[in-house]
Each structure stands twice: as structure tokens, then as C-alpha cells.
Length: 259
Ligand code: NAD
Image (cartoon, rainbow, N blue to C red):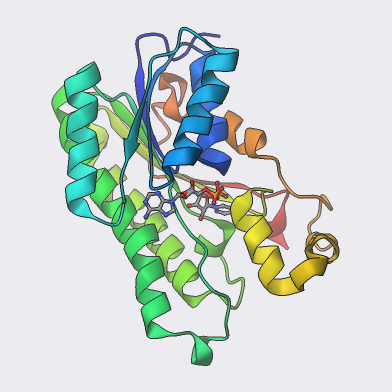
């Protein structure tokens, strides 16, 4: 398939995990890419991996903090100056934050997680939607989480931010469908990326791999998801095959959200 030939896709959190895996899938299918992240080294590694599997790919890197609206405005302008359009936007950068019971959850930590996971997604949508409305076409995929559709515990900031992402998705889907723009969210369960590794280290310290086994034993499929499994879903949703899917939140979690 070549679903991204002549298409431009912007991916936040493109230096790692789900963002990188999705960038690789888009590149395999001929897409042009702008990868956005705070992590310059990680961005360069993503670019090298893309060049290995799809050397022809036009891939630009934008070092930016999604929690700062001026950075968001800058990477969108950069994309328009470079490629002249945005067909797909994977609004995906995020952090988990520290784990704690609600009564012990620090207000600064709460604000930090919201700034990145919720404000960052909002700024991205706000600026990309202007472009897509003008084009009369586009697909936005926001990364929510299982923690955005059900209670997980010990994650006040994360839960509030990801439920917020679901709300933003549904609200804007109703507004922008009439312009040919569709907006959806994915809700991953436990997928083995740097974020999950860090989280397991918080739980299990040096013995984090054992903590991981115990953690995942309650999942109906008894395993962590792989970044590429999320990337297959995200690329479908970013492509025009998914244009009529609008406002929908799709869980990809081995069945965790039905437990
Ligand atoms: P990851 O840590 O591998 O990747 C996240 C990327 O986001 C990193 O490259 C990081 O540098 C970047 N980032 C963080 N803050 C940023 C900021 N302020 N500005 C720009 N970039 C920033 O983790 P991942 O698992 O690939 O996470 C991607 C998304 O998926 C996140 O929104 C996360 O909440 C969500 N998610 C992940 C899982 C999972 O199990 N891995 C589950 C549910 C949801």
C-alpha cells in the first residue's frame, strides 16, 4: 500500500515509542514527515531509522515543547513553509508523571502533566485545524489512553489529562466534520516503550522486569503491546481510508478496558 504518497504527516513525540513507530510506517508508505519532540538526539535516531528503511523519505525535525503555544505555532509554520500542507497530524507527545494516591498527588505535578498532555494536545489541534479547514481535508489522531476512558489509580494528572483529550476529540469532531476534517483518539493500554519502562522502574526499582510481569498478568492477553501494533492503527486512522471515522475513541489494549 502507498496510502501516504504525496501526503504530509506531522508527529509529536516523534523521538521515541509510539511516535517513532508510526513515523516508520508512514515512511514505508511514501509519506513526508515532520517529527516534533523535545529530545533532539531521539529525533535524530528516528530520522536515521527512517532513512535505513525508506531512504527516499523527506523527513524534517522540529525541536519543540508541545506545552508552549509559541513552539507549536512555530513547528506548524515550519511544516507549511517546507511542505505547503498537513494531511495527517499524530498529536501524541505525552508523559505519565509521578504515581501517587490522590491525597498525596502534588499540585505542581498535576499542573505539569496537564500542561503537556492536555494543553499540548489542545494547542496542536488549534493550530492544525486552521490549516486543515482551509485545505478542506485532514485527519487528526490524538493519543489518549486506557487511563482516559476508565480509572487506573495513582494517576490523577494523567487521568485528568487523558479524559480531557477524549473530550477535546469529541468536541472538535462535531465542529470540523463539515470541512472534511476528521478527529479521532486512540486509547492504548500498556505498550512497551520508554514511558512504561520508566513507570515500571518507579514500581519495582531494579526488579522492574519482575514488576512488569506481575503488572501485565492481569491483562486478558497476558502481554504488553508492541509500539508497531499501535502504529498500524495510527497509520490507518491518519490515512484517508479512515476519513469517516470522526469523534471515535479506539482502545488498543489487549482487552484491558473491558475487565
Ligand atoms: P515515550 O516516552 O517513548 O515517547 C513520548 C515522547 O514524547 C518522548 O520522545 C518525549 O521526549 C516526548 N515529549 C514528552 N514531553 C514533551 C513535550 N513537552 N514536548 C515535546 N515532546 C515531548 O512514550 P510513548 O509510550 O511512546 O508515549 C506516547 C503517547 O502515548 C503519550 O501521550 C502517552 O501518554 C501515550 N500512551 C502510552 C502508553 C504506553 O503504554 N506506552 C499507554 C497509553 C498512552
